[in-house]
Amino acid sequence: MKHFLNTQDLSRAELDALLAAAARFKRAPVGEALKGKSIALVFFNASLRTRASFELGAFQLGGHAIVLQPGKDAWPIEFDLGTVMDGDAEEHIAEVAKVLGRYCDLIGVRAFPKFTDWSLDRQDRVLQAFARHATVPVVNMETITHPCQELAHAMALREHFGTNDLRGKKYVLTWTYHPKPLNTAVANSALTIATRLGMDVTLLCPTPDYVLDERYMGWARDNVAEAGGSLHVSHDIEAAYAGADVVYAKSWGALPFFGSWAAEKAIRDRYRHFIVDEAKMALTNDAVFSHCLPLRRNVKATDAVMDSPRCIAIDEAENRLHVQKAVMAWLAGGAA
Image (cartoon, rainbow, N blue to C red):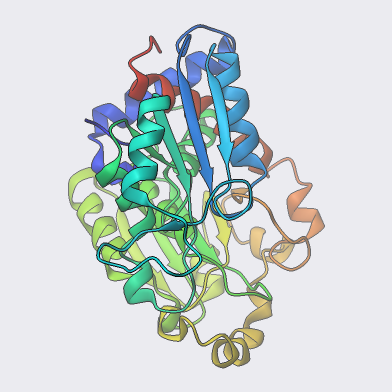
């Protein structure tokens, strides 16, 4: 049984097929690829784009989405085996996943890290437990990676540049300041998809502490070896932006300080100048700018950058709808 947990699990042919299907769904939004099908959308964290696009996508293809929020409108769930369940959890994932599989054709899961211990969070235990116990395909709606965002981002870049071949483009994934510690998921995914597409990728971050987990750095190096392109890590803002064709911004927490927010905050407060502004964008090769959203204006990027015609963040957000239709139709066996 196939799941959609990470794009790294898919072949390049499968990735291209999903993006081609998404383009078809964008041209013809309404269809019957999910007629008679249903998807349970399990949200452990808040959502705007993900929930709206999955619900609407299922509806437009003739399917039905059921939204569940464990601990709010559904029972709290236990994920460890062998646990004496005398705490807050009312039922175990072993039963939850199997029951939802009896009701629905697909299960979507959104579950962020706990931000206390990266060695535990990097196991992606919630998503992996659903995939292990479910009897139907599982979709990653963002955990420690965000593969749906990857596809939407890739689609927006292909649309902007007017080609499926993005080799030779300089891609800058830049850390930005944020007043809170954030998930590394989108950064992990951006690094994965940009290298998978053969671009020349620069990871720009303030210090080595902000380099991403070795799992994703390793995936990126593997992708470069397979697809061409290159991968560089830089702490030099001007050098990184120089000649860039794409600037993708995201804030994320420093892994050595994972779970120690007070210690990291004193460090990250020194790097507010990593904001994406007009001066930095002027160093680029008339680059496009994007972000996964939500974005704090004038913290991560200035109003001028967000409102520029070179900003494709809204195009990328729209594409979430189309790529997720492609994923759901593929997993459910519907005509894409």
